[in-house]
Structure formats: structure tokens, C-alpha cells
Image (cartoon, rainbow, N blue to C red; front, side, top):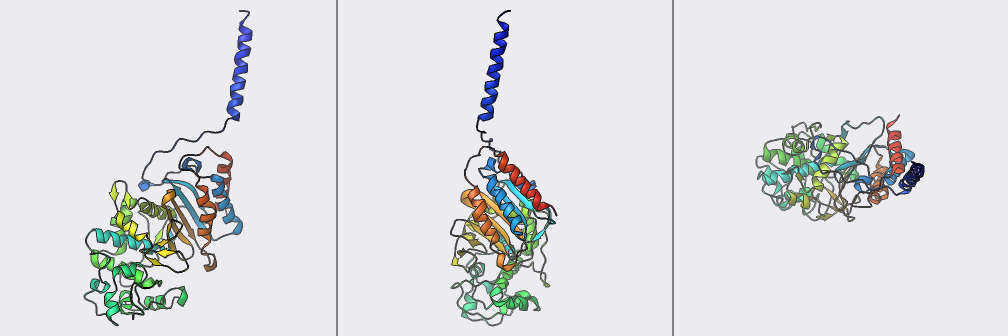
Length: 384
């Protein structure tokens, strides 16, 4: 009995030492989360669980607030998990946002699906072959040689004049015409197709008309059945021209999370939960550089912008971005109402904060300080 007190004291001292050691020890990395498909909704994770630095992402959110950039929402997905997400008041998570020219990348996917189903022969098919019942004006050797691939790569040779370089002159004329598809087909040729990049919204609308001509379904209905349906995208808006053709160059409305789903589909080479929604060869061809582009990026694929840094983007007017970074297993979405001079702000934020935040392919030790800063900055953006 006389030895029990020293034993108790020894045990108490050992417990104090163990607690002190535990307090001083570095936090261990969280276990990786199990893979899944976000068909029914995205799962979330801390940035550190996916090998990203939460402090870098917090600084991005703080920069958005500090500079009062007209960004409405940001979604960052790593390894299939949403690791950072912010919505700027009054925009909310489930609100639809017009994606403008990101619509073009969606239409490109539909073209690839139609080719895979045999409705379209391939990218070498002449454009005029899709409209045998139309009398087309200004037909010459160049127009007869214009292929589907020429339209996909913005090198169709048509005298479109419907980009910002021409103050949208041709686009306005198309929208005021009696038949948008006929208007584009009737345009005179300016040069040999396939020789030079020239942004052409009318050409993108022509792609939607081709999908409708070959599949018997408007692009909106075809997407609902063959593209959006498998991804679990059930809420969207996609208006049509007065002739009933889904607008191919713009005006699709999606939530930011569903935009991220589309990016994630391409990150996974067109596969989704055991189904090949978009042919993998089409994804590769679409996101490879086919032609030197203008000022927005280093190159252009099939309605996708391709950057030499190793990522590719669906881009839309006023700062709509779906960025896919394959070597980092990363998808980043921005929705915005930016002025023209601020169009590149989302890509600068990507380069300055998001890409550097990816530091490991394995989980990192928890970072409570960084996580609190991220949560606080996201909360601040969501308040009036």
C-alpha cells in the first residue's frame, strides 16, 4: 500500500508528458476521400485533403473582395471534390447564370456525340452537304470546300464580321435577319477555309443547326438526352432562334456547379460513371490546338481555347470561364459580369492563386488557420 502514491504520481507525470508531446506534434495528413461521381451533387472537401493550400485560395477570395471585381461565383474542384466555392451577394449557388460563349464548347460536345452515333459522317464533311434543301447564295469553290472542321476551328473563311473587332456588326445583322441559319450560309467567302482564325458567332450557330439537321433534335433537347442527362444536369435554360434552332453561339444558362460538371466530364476524357458520354478521341481533338488563335489564348481547338501552359478553357463574354487543368486534376469555374477591360481577371486569379495552391498529389496536414481564413472570406463575399 505504501508504494501506491509514487506509482500514481508517475502515471500522472507520464500523462502530462504524452499530452505535451501531442500538443507539439505536427498535424498528420487527413486520409484521402473515396472516389465518386457527382451526378447527384458535388461532395466537398477541405483543400488540404486534396493537396491544396487553403491560405492561397483564401487570398484569392480576399482579392476579389478588395478589388470589388464583378465576379458572381467561383467553384474550385480538385480530384472530384469541391474544395473552394464562393458566391457574391446577391448571386446564390443554385442560380442560373448565362454562360455566353461557353455555349460553343457545349455545342462542340454535341457534334462529337452526333458523329459517334453516325448522324454526322465526320469533321471532313462539307458544310453545304448538311443543307441540301436550301438554296445558298455566294457559292464558290471556297464555300464548297468549307468543312465542319473549318467551322469548329473558327477558320471557316466566311465574311462574318460578328466579333468585338467589328462591334458585333455581323451578329446584329444575323439576329435581325429572317432566318439566322440561311443568313450565315449566304455570307460571301473572304478567304480559303482552314487558313486563318477569325472569330465567328454565326459559324457557332451553324453548328447548332447542323446538330438539329442530322439528329432531328434541337441542340437543347439533344443535350438533355445525351449530355446533360447522364451528368445529372436537370435545370438549365437554352433559348432558340426565331426559327427554332437552339442558339449555338451563346445564351445557355447553367449553374456554376453544373458548369463544373461539364468541365469534369472533359477532365475524365468524356467518361462519366461507366458511360462514355463524349468519345474520348473527340475530347482529345477538341482540346488540342488546331490553329493559332487571337488574343484570348495560344490556340484554338474545336470551340475550346487551348493554353500552352497545359490547360484549356471554355470562355464566355463578361468573364465566364470553365478551366480544365488535366495534369493537376483540377476544374475551375468563374461566372462574372465583368467589363471588357477586366475580362482576363479570372485567368489572372487562376494563375496567381489557384494553380500555386496545388502543392501535392497526396493529402496535406490540416491547416486550421488557412481553413478559417477561407471560410471567413467566402462568408464575407456572400453578405450584402
